[in-house]
Image (cartoon, rainbow, N blue to C red):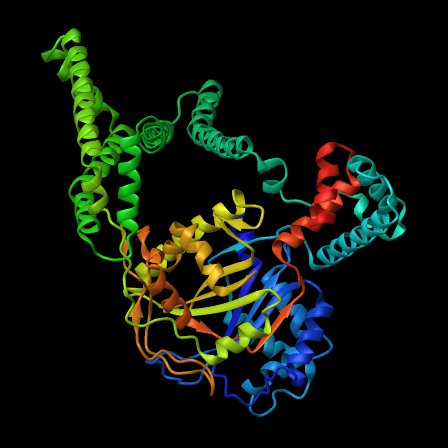
Length: 604
């Protein structure tokens, strides 16, 4: 499932670009690439950039990077084959400078060498998010045509003063006109949707999917132990007792199977127990206690505070002294319950041997009463010292020594797409040790990809809207980190959505990176003169991107301009979703919901 998402977004990085190819917007290479991608008709976004070499690289020449966001179901090898072996030869025109002598005389031989070189530099995304999913470029184009036709028809009907204020009759008339128009026969079938946007869209379906996988796992583990026992029993019945060695192996397999089965079931109960604790302390208790709610918000605010204050410093160290040991103790108890349940049983027997049942119950009741009293006293003190607390948790913004400085090449690229889908490249270095940091980056990106695939299915990642394709790549043998994104709106608003919304995922995706000094890839392109690290984090997921000015400066300095860009969608994520919902409403059953959707589409 995650592999499918990742394979839709690929980058081809070929080092050693010598700069002899004309990559100007009006040049023959870029013009030919644009025609090629339109003809292939399975690429939704494409762009080209020059990646500057590392300061310690043996070859100081930049790398030529081609980004491709392709449609679902197209394998990376397949798309490379389609592009390379296209009759136009546009890909050879782009990469011919890597063969100074002109390459083999035969076109087939040139294409074979080119495909081999591109496959060497191909990397599928380590993680990614797709906004308007389950739609091909052709489908988007057709649905936009339907949306525009419907709006034109609606204007004509309003000008003729047909149906007055009767929304249902108005929507029905539009649906009838669309249904009778042979131009829209393709829309008679419902718009295609993946499982997680259709049958699996409900929370119940997602939970059921996980439970089904768990049950299948239990069944497989049980069968591993049961099948050898059954076969041995049949053999014994038919031919008598087997060799002792066979019996020992079957007993060992059966014992291991039973142990894994028990561990799996106890793991489920442990996870449920930890979930209940989290819900109690993070949701239930804040809902009934104003003081607890205020304290919890204060802790979160102080852990995310972009600079050091007395309040943030004390919260951080109390977290290390109290919070971390408490969490480790709870996790340790869970692990003991999972792997050594006999220890808990022995401890219970030892406790009941020293104390009677009524004594244990009385002790539990007294502990609960004591906790309630302590909590009440602390709440009372908190109310009395509200003014002091407000002073202690006073807001404070950090000054950034170096404000955002946008290179003119980046400004130029953003100006070219000011009314279109925006685009960005970010190139950073992976912190040392590279293998350790790359491992955690991959783990974090798998989590982000899973949540994007299963939970955030309608073009929003957390609270961040308008992302078409966003993907991350670990390149150059784990030394560098490449981020590519196609999104709606401005760069500042794009980052604000993550800073104010999907902070945890964004921090996880970037926290193991740093910016090292590097030169420019070509004349007029940006260089990194002042190296720096990603803003500091706390407990892995806090702070980080909340250091807004530092993060924006870091992101700006990591950016590279594109030298070519192709967009087959040419619509916002909201516009794409609106057109799809109109298609389903016009050609679906007549009800109030579909009528409202039709009116919303023509009035937006």
